[in-house]
Length: 202
Ligand SMILES: Nc1ncnc2c1ncn2[C@@H]1O[C@H](COP(=O)(O)OP(=O)(O)OP(=O)(O)O)[C@@H](O)[C@H]1O
Ligand SMILES: O=C(O)c1ccc[n+]([C@@H]2O[C@H](COP(=O)([O-])O)[C@@H](O)[C@H]2O)c1
Image 1 (cartoon, protein in one colour):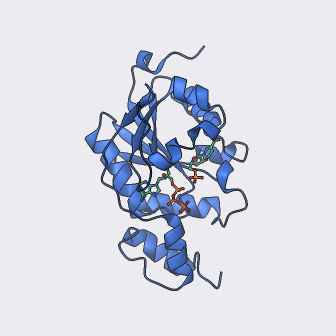
Image 2 (tube, rainbow, N blue to C red):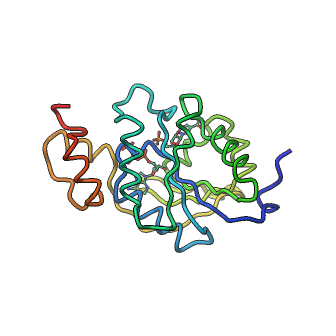
C-alpha cells in the first residue's frame, strides 16, 4: 500500500512531464518559477519519448530532445532533466513513471505540474483517479482554459507568469526558416540550427 504524500519526509519535487519537442522558454519560465516561488525544492523535467496523446505526430528523436533539454537547463541547480521514461513501455503513461520514480526515491514527495489545458484532459489519462488520489497537482493557468470551480482537493492553483508560445509554433517557425531567437535559450537555438532540426529539408 502506498503511503499518502503527507507521510513522506524527503524533498518536495515538482515534475513537469512533456514531449519537449523542442523545449522552449515557456517551459523554462514555468519550471524555474515553480522551483523558486513555491514550496518545491526542485523541478524535474521528464522527457516523454511518446505521449499517448501524440502518437503519429511529428517528433524529433528522444535522445535529441533530451539533449536540447539538458542544454536548456545547464547551470540551474534547481532544475533537472530525466530520461526515466526511455526505459519504460511506450506510449508513456504518467502513472507508470510516477510508480517508477516513487520506487527509486521513496522518501521524496512528488507533485505534478500541469497547465489548465492538461488538467481539463486529466480524466482521460491512464489511472487518472489514482493520480489525483495519490499526488498533489499544481496547476497554472493557460490562455483559454478556466480552472474548475471548486478545485479538486489535491489541486492547487499557482499563478505563474507564462509566455504564450508552444513547441508547435517553434516547429512552424523553423520549417519556414524564421527566427526562434529568445524563444529558446541560445545554446538550444545554436544546436537546433547546427543540426537542422525541424527544418523543411530534414
Ligand atoms: N508556454 C508555456 N508555458 C507554460 N507551460 C507550457 C507552455 N507550453 C507548454 N507548457 C506545458 O509544458 C508541458 C509539456 O508541454 P509539451 O512538451 O507538450 O509542450 P508544448 O509546447 O505544449 O508542445 P506542442 O505545441 O508540441 O503540443 C505541458 O504540461 C504543457 O501544458
Ligand atoms: O498517462 C497518460 O494517460 C497521459 C496522457 C496524455 C499525456 N500524458 C503525458 O503528459 C505529458 C504532456 O503530454 P503532451 O501530449 O501534452 O505532450 C507527456 O509527458 C505525456 O506522456 C500522459
